[in-house]
Amino acid sequence: MWWPDTAGPYAGDCWAIEAELIPKQLDRVASIMTGLLARDADWSPGSMPCGPQRFDQVIYLCSRAARPVTEQAAAQAPGQRRRLLVRDLPGGALR
Image (cartoon, rainbow, N blue to C red; front, side):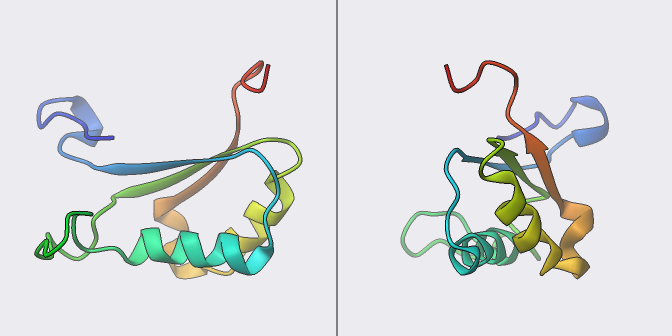
């Protein structure tokens, strides 16, 4: 998700948003999370690095079942917690 350059406090930010609907193994979630936090280029083959990190924020929206393992994975990235948010899916999202 890109924020326009003139959109207030998030101007120019790029966010990665993941939806965790079912629980995965801890190592799998941690690997995906670490990859998103470390990513420094676009997804296109041959893309050049765009700066110290591709995503200013990495946001996980979780089902009730997936939240515990996602929180555990996030706890393994303490130096990145300012860029990493874990939240519940909006009400009714799984209907």
